[in-house]
Length: 351
Image (tube, rainbow, N blue to C red):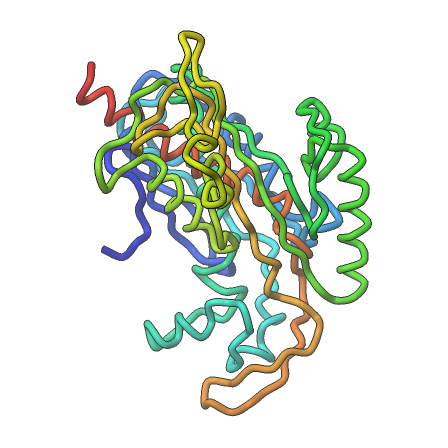
C-alpha cells in the first residue's frame, strides 16, 4: 500500500504534485442521488486557496475544480467521483538554486532517502498544495453527513502563542483568521506581521467541534473513531499533535475529575470529547490540533546538500507565514471524511 488512500467504505485517494500539471482526488463509496455541483465544492476550496490573507502565500491559484465523473443531472450516481484542480500559477524556477539542498523542516531529506528521487519543485507530493484535493473530497463527505444532521466547525484557537479566550462563534466571520475572539484576532494579525518582517513563521492551534453526531460510530479495537480521527489529522503535513476532549490535561486529573458523569439529561462534563472506548457517545466531539510553524523561512539555516556537504540556506519565494487560516478547511475536511466513512460502516452493521 502506497499510503495515498484513506477510508474503508468511503474512500479518498489524492494524486498530483505542487508543480505538476494538476492535482486531484478520486472519491468512492459516495451514496447516489446527492445533489452535487462544482459550485458546492468551490465554496470550500476558496477558503483554502492562497492569496486571501496576510499570512498566506501570494501564489495566485484559482483552485478551480472540475468534476470528471460520478455526477449525472447534478446528482451523485454512486460511482467513483473524480475531481481535478489544474496548477496554473507555477514558478518552478524559484527552486532551481536549492534543488540539491535539503530544506530544514521539509520532507526533502526523507523523500530522497526513501525513494532515491524527489520532486524539488515546491516539495512535490509533500507540498501543502496536496491538501486542496482533501478539501474537495471533504465537500462531498460533508453532503453525506449533513443528511444525518452532523456538522463540523473548525476555528483558530491559538496563533503564535496568542489564545482565543472570549469565544463567540459568530465572530469567526468577522476576521480573516476565523478566530472566535475578535480582540485576540487583532493581536494575532500583529504577531503575523512581526514574523513576516523578521523573515520567520508561526505555528498555531486549530479547534474542531463536531455537533449532531449520533452515538455508535467507531469500531473496536484498532478502528476506534478517535484513533482514525487522530490519524487523519496527523496525515496533514503541518500537524504535530492531536488531542480529544481534555487531552493532555487528563493526565493531571483525578479519576473523579476526569470521568464524565452521566445524568438522565446527558453527560455532566466533556472531558472525553464525545468519544468513549473509541465509539461516539452522542455528545459534541471536541478536538484540538497543534500545527507547526511553516518550514520555508528567509532566516539563514544550516543544512546539507545531496552529497552531504554542509550548506547554509535562505529560502526565498512565495510562502505562507502561518498555516492558519488556510489549514482550517483542511482540518474540517479530514474530520468530515472520517465521519462519512464511519457512518457508512455503522449503517452496514447496525441498520
